[in-house]
Every structure is written in structure tokens, then in C-alpha cells.
Amino acid sequence: MGKKESKKDRERKAITATFFIDPVCPWGYSASPALRVLEWRYRDQLAWEMVLIGLSRPGDPPLPFTPTQLAALMVQFRDRFGMPFALEPKARPSTSSRACEAIVACREVNPGSEWKALRALQLLFFNTPLLPDDDQQIASALGTVDGLKVDAVMAAIDTKAVQAAYETDRKRSRSAAGSPSELQGKTADSPDGIRYTAPSIIFSNGSSTLEAGGFQPIDAYDVIVANLDPSLRRFDPPSDPAEALSLYAGGLTTQEVAALLASGMEEPDRAAAERSLIELVGEGQVNRVPLGNDALWIARGKGAS
Image (cartoon, rainbow, N blue to C red; front, top):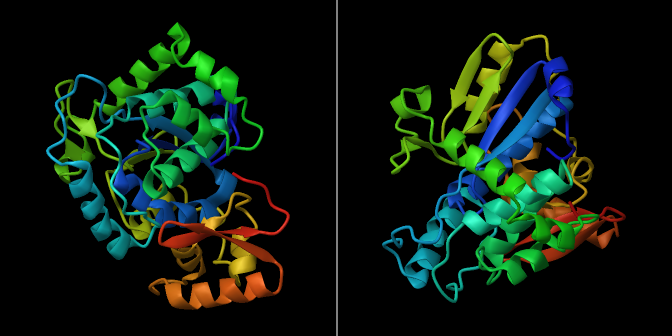
């Protein structure tokens, strides 16, 4: 996920992957290791499209959790799925729509940058005091994305084009009634219709469409892709963490590296991955950037994603 593709580019590829996500959803964030594996295995044979869900906006009923309760809830995601989390409570409750609008603005102003913007907002929302409905803080977060014209993005958020595109995303996200995802219990009720939950992915080869609703293991994605087009090339796991980092200029978390290194039905060996990464730091090949209770590991000479 990273570079913008035209509709014709997507049509030339074997499979399109429509990705429903919200930057503040802990399920979507915690699916990152599986998504990195999917990207590694199939690379540019998959044509990705992002749809922003918009979980909450000003005026919606408040969540039944205080910031402290939400921070405590993140412990479960940290311990179960392994992505980095900082557990300090946020300064106040917040909504996600402004961050979603900012990502849509990235897509409109600098097509392809929405993937890097999503990554930046996810990492910072779950590991810093970032409030996703504060324009100044959103702009600061987007400022970590190399090459992004942040001023242009922020100026575009309230334009008719961006607001219309965002509303289209919200409507698409709320069209899950009668879907396989609903049958699996992977959707959510909303005032505007049955909603896809993050990180739902709809895969299509042009003639057949299959859904992986909500949070799924990597094997679910892999089975779908293999059945839609068994002629694809499927890349083997990287031989070591240095190779794993080679596709990700913005770096990977420890759990993402461990997931990439796992073969077959092996469980990711986080401890072994971390030891190998530390060795690479000592050899000067990798930088370790502290992040929450973990780190972002970045190959030397690579820029931010």
C-alpha cells in the first residue's frame, strides 16, 4: 500500500482489495502484522483502495468509556496482538471523523499519500497524546510523512470535493446489510445502515468477490487471494529482519517483523525477531525508534513512510 493507482491500473491487476478502515480503531491497528504479511506475499499483484469508515463525529452519542477506561482497554490489544501502545489516558474524549477527513484530503491532494497518512495517524494515536479531532495535532502528525504538502491537505479538508468524497466513503462503509461479513457477525449497527468494521477487506478479481469482514487472521486473507487467482506469484517469507525491512521505508514494529518472518503455520517468534533486530542495530544497519511499549525499526538510509 503506498502508491496511487488509476482505475485502469487496478483493472490490469489480478485482484482489487477494498480496505475499510478508521485510524482510531484498535482492531484495525492491531491487524497491521497480518496486513504486512499480505502485502509481502502478493505485493503489486493486489490493487488497494482505502475506504474511511468514520466511526464517530461531533454530535454522536459519547462512548460509554472515559479516557482512562479506554486506555486500560488498550492493554488487552497490546498483550493479545503485539502492536505498540502507550497507555496514558487522552486529555479528553474525541471523535475520528476529522482524522478520516484529513486522510481523504491526502488522497485528493496527493493521491497515494493516504496510506502513509493512515500509518502515521495510527502509530501516533495509539502511542502519543494525539487527539484525532484537533486540526493542529493532525497537521503535526501528517508532518511526519515525507513529501506530504501538509498545508495543502489541511486547507482541503473542508472543501466540497473532500467532504463529498468522505461522505461517499461513509456510505460505502454502511452498505454491509446482507453481506457475508454480516453473516459472520463482523459488522456493526449504525443509524445509517449496517456498517463494515475495521479492517474489513473486499477482494475481487472482476468476476468474483469475496469478503474478509472485520478482524481476520492472515490465513483468511491468503485463502481468499489464492482462490481468486491461483496463478499469482506468492513470495516466501524474508530470510531475516533486514530483508523484511527492505520493503518498508517507514519501518516496522517488532510484531510486524516477527509476522513476516514466520513460515507456514508457525506462530510469530517475537523474541527471536527482537534479538535479531537488536543485532542489526549494533551492526549499524537499523535504527530503533522507541514507540509506546515497543519500537519502530527502520533500515538505515530509509525515510519515513
